[in-house]
Length: 256
Length: 278
Image (cartoon, rainbow over all chains, first blue to last red; front, side, top):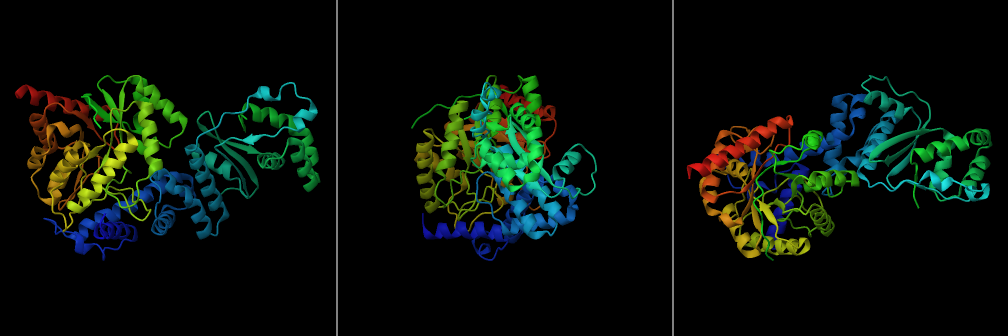
């Protein structure tokens, strides 16, 4: 490859990304109709439209929450500041939720963006096999307490300060929800049977899953949570069995 | 590296809005499907299961948009490995991509950008095609792109450039008849001369699609039916080159599957009537 070829392609590519034709126009032959500038603009415009469409497609609920114009401006800014670096265009919108959180002083919008980004990300990942319910059969209390449980490979635990998941569910059901209520909400987003699941859990269950997914045994996790917040002891004692029964049916843990 | 490329008839681009209809109806009018490689090489197992299901009734060829064969960044070995794995999984008759580059300096524009056609770029692409073919363990099939500008330092016509690449590397061609029409309009060359230059034995597949005419230029949008002039150019291609596996692309404003089937039947009709008239 010659330096000239290298420089020419770099100038062309950066010209598109930066929407700047100054280093490019001298290289372009005069077209039979119109101008070289107009022809280059087909590429600069196409680049922006393509990336903006890709981002917008992954954040329909955020689009509903914000007005179209405000989101459009933010996506356009994101595209100007964030070149794509991967061949898979589906990966490009995943960084947009972080951009929203840095740009907007609106935690609900940030949470909606994070949830939609997480759903897209989890959807793209390969899921691991779920742990079969039989793994819990015939265990002594000690064996149960010493169990270590792993999260599914395509999964993420999220905690929100709004009822963000409820808001998203209402939106997806075709309702026209008002602003998300300001109440804490905890969700485990994971792929199971090739579909993205959003499991809402209470705070104590969220903390338990968090400890388990950080490598603690069940017993270690329970001790850690109750030591940190004694008020959760009763909730855990009352619900632990039911939680695990529900989680096993719903494929919350990965097979090991 | 030698490999035979079978004639597989008339196919369609496999697009998400049509998945359910195709799985339910298994239309016999479609003999094969072309997938966009990037939609599946990183997709989860559910999508591969879907392809495996479809593969029971149809051959599936792979068409990529990210190889960046003309690019200056190193070839993406991870991408090539994933392409090869999917091709093996599908027993794909061929893997195609475009004569273009997609970005530079690690950035991807997700577009098919034009390159200058000259001896330097010819040598560069020859080297990269050899490397790709070695990685994929099969000949590459390259599509003529639609383009909206030409470089002053191009010294070779696009069709001569493609012919030279075939001669130097053994790669084959996916002739996009709509792209020839679009580029001929945009740059003012003769479309039939372009087609005449390409040897029959180099052409593995034909693409047909709709486009958007903006007066001064045409953009290859794949969002409309194939226009009459492109059908005539397709008939001319079949007349000159004989039977070539043909497929219709429709990627934006995607209509109901029946509408796309009508386009495929038109292709079949034009090919048949052209052969009968010969």
